[in-house]
Length: 212
Image (cartoon, rainbow, N blue to C red; front, side, top):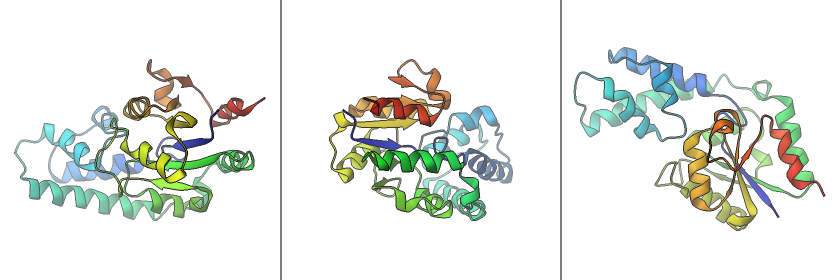
């Protein structure tokens, strides 16, 4: 029986993909590096530094580790500045209602996101207080497809992995959930992934798991 659900943030509860894309695009343009949506799709679910390495595959020069750190910091500053425009109106009302329904059923809910900006986003859209635990890029060493972010969320919740489900929209996230022994639920692109255990089109479909 599932007692807790761990949600990825970007692409699942709110779509900030476009903000990431614009920030990476500006960084790439400033460095005269080719960058497009196809490359951007490879960045989903992976850490900032790993994302930068993917982008730098198209670079005409080799960047030192220090230069990479400067670039990653610059990208995050651009991204965080754009996040300041987020408000509760950016959250689909049905998402908040869905989360409240889960809580009314005594289902614990957590965030499992590789992003170091997860808490800022949740605060901006006004739902940070709904979550029983937040595991994000600030408390992990390994990014997805390593299961660490979900394992830490499970530990924070005090619920064993076999009683936790993970909701993801990216293949790397599904792989991480499966590797950790969680029930993987895929939405968006992950809905089409063969390794996804349960495929959904809308978050509300998750409620079917708790029907008697």
